[in-house]
Length: 163
Image (cartoon, rainbow, N blue to C red; front, side, top):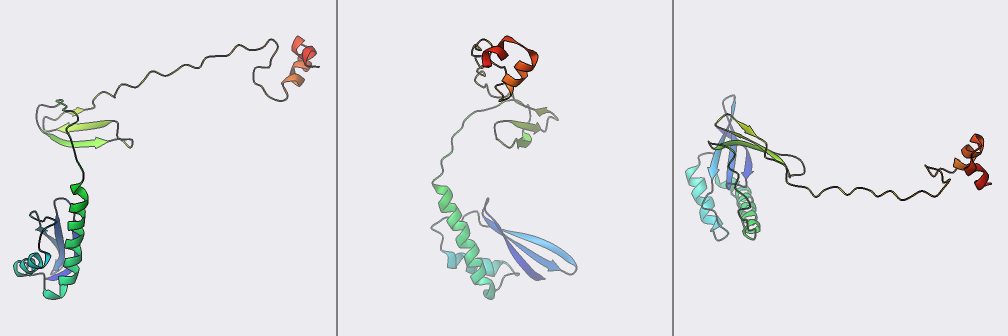
């Protein structure tokens, strides 16, 4: 068995060991579910090295960096607060999938009951209609610079007024 690299997993906190055994590439997760900002990193690293045959003392500096990154992430997320916004009861059985659109205002769900649901879009405020301003008599419709020339070519009243 030869250790190739470490992969960091932020939630749930852990480190994944990627290693070779013969011709196969395998992974082994090391869960750090009890990790808190108050955790003694040296004690944790010593315990990991004792329990995992893939880890050795020479890998301790790399492991220490990874564990400190996880602790920093835990401290960063400690300030976040979440609350229950809405409960949707669209399926009979638990959800298996949920996908959001790019803007995050629509989503689709799939369930063990073999149904797919697309909840109704949130109500949007009605579109305001543009109010047309009354046109002055004889004014060109498009406002282009050559409108008086076109009107003269047609011989209209607007052409006589423009001259």
